[in-house]
Amino acid sequence: MKVERKRIHFIAVGGAAMHNLALELARKDFDISGSDDEIFEPSLSRLKSANLMPHEFGWFPEKITKDINAVILGMHASPDNPELIKAQKLGIKIYSYPEFLYEQTKNKKRVVIGGSHGKTTVTSMIMHVLRKSGIEFDYMVGAQIEGFDTMVSLNNNSEVAIFEGDEYLSSPIDRRPKFHLYKPHIALINGIAWDHINVFPTFKDYIVQFDKFINVIEPGGELHYNKNDREVIKLINRNKREDLTFKKFDTHKCNISKHCSELILENNQHLPVNFFGEHNMQNVSAAMNICVSLGISKPQFYNTISEFKGSAKRMQLLHKSDELSVYLDFAHAPSKVEATVKAVKQQYRNSKIVTILELHTFSSLNRQFIETYKGTLEPADYPIVYYNKQTIKHKKLPEISQKEIREAFGHKSLEVIDDISNLKELLNKYKEDLPGVYLFMTSGNFGGLSKDDLIKVCLK
Image (cartoon, rainbow, N blue to C red):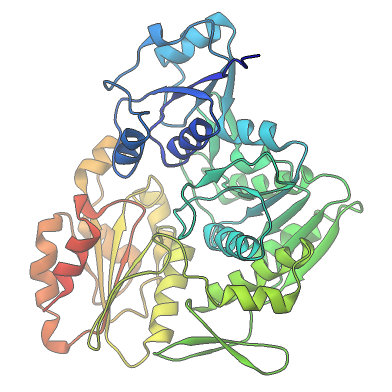
């Protein structure tokens, strides 16, 4: 007997998580359609290769028909989206993508990695170790990882789901943070620092979301937390649920040099790894805690983590030679920028460091929030901040001047540019001082520069 394929339509299919979920469901033999008013790389090429690319950009309510089983709504859409309105009128079930992931995994053990920073790296580390250990699992992670075809996977044979727990909103019509919807059995909070000022206008508004996150952990569950983060400790102290087991983790002991980083194990052995920085030593401890809870022994964890090469735009090494190293990192919030710059300076303590930070998010371009960046670029020898005035207009924010940005960061050598074409000329000023490391940090794309372009502007 022929089984009818379920039809699912994606509104705003071009998003990073959305297009990955569309690819995964198509692989699982769902009948997938989607719409969007703009789609950029790499989503564009990946949707085309899977024959899921919309024939034209825009919103078409005629695509929404009664035979659609479900609609998955992305954050890029608006509440008055014509396709959404049509789906509501027809009574079609509408999911945000975190809500859909929960529905697909509600009979599995769910692990959710939360916190203001380190979520993607910790999730990636856990995924790497489980995969190398031969354990099947579902997952959702916020970056492309070597060895994994998509950022989302749903497996009929798995008993465990590993989710990166983003605190941003679920959809235009569901104002709950994504990580509230997953209802974990095992949860982790790595660190807390204010972010997403457009939806959490005060730090108090932001931190309440983590109180609520603890409340949605399944009874009898576990909460792993960073013992060195002051805000996390305050959070734990006021949320002592008696039906949860609380497990703390520390910064892993390590040895850092220019040539490599090494984890120092309990027997005083040194294990070379492909990542560095204090924040990553916290991340690896966090990942080990979770893996042990999932039945992985510490020796097995160490045996597999030594091969971990990171995830896209998380301290990603773009170029390395005897004279020059070029890194790309997703850092954009103040705590992430500070940790990343500090890590690079520690790793390359005898080299001159050039940092290029793009202010791209709503928070980073907000006058009220930008003051929280003070001191974050302090270890850099040559700090540069780039921002695009068109991005400010697009986000409908008040204009911000280069002077205001300089004063906010408080670095005496800070250069500020609002035209990316000026970057090459600016970097040439530093060449005589022979800088050894260039660190690009952004959640954007530096005005459209590719990774190859970033390398070229650094070469002598």
